[in-house]
Image (cartoon, rainbow, N blue to C red; front, side):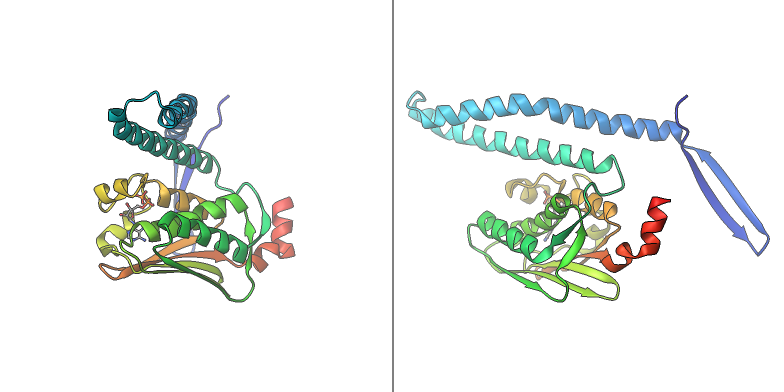
Length: 269
Ligand code: ADP
């Protein structure tokens, strides 16, 4: 009674002939589903114990009960508990994003407001070491899921801070053209060697694992961005020069196309 998942591959030979290969991928699909459910369940189960541990650690730190020699270990334990909480939250978000290929919400999002919010978060994350500028040209709105778009924009902006040691300028830009809306984050940081670029959105792929962990990275940020983009029919391009900086650009399809009557008709049919 279980749904069957088939994959079709069509190769055309001239005008009248075609080779059609039908693959039964039900087993693979179910295994993938089990993997996703497992990760989501484990992450969910880890949340409660983590909240309790973090809570008691905070109480101990703020009380006089802990002897002075415990101060440093307590700070480290609290930092690690916070790291684990971020990791668990990122795993849960990724599992949720992977369950469907369509965005959850579909509202008009004010991109300028979103960018201002992300810029404030980036400045606070950097301890005001970096200058974060925001520029919005043309129609500063997009249709999509507000919370998912925030995750994608914020991940790119926080990465720009994390991978720009010292200080430096970070530019957040939005513009529209005939192809659609584009959001870019430009930094003057360490840059990325071109050989790593195709693998950046893989889960836990890091160019320099030590640096990523030290800066609080979970290795899931760009995987989250990728899934948000998939759900919005969008794509990402990366331009980077080692030791000079990187520009990550998100390309969203034209909103006007999404709102056209023919598209709406197709969706209701
Ligand atoms: P992480 O949590 O490690 O930052 P991400 O998935 O967000 O994980 O990014 C994957 C890797 O891509 C990072 O570990 C880092 O090596 C590289 N990276 C991402 N953004 C930048 C950037 N703006 N500049 C340089 N390297 C970057």
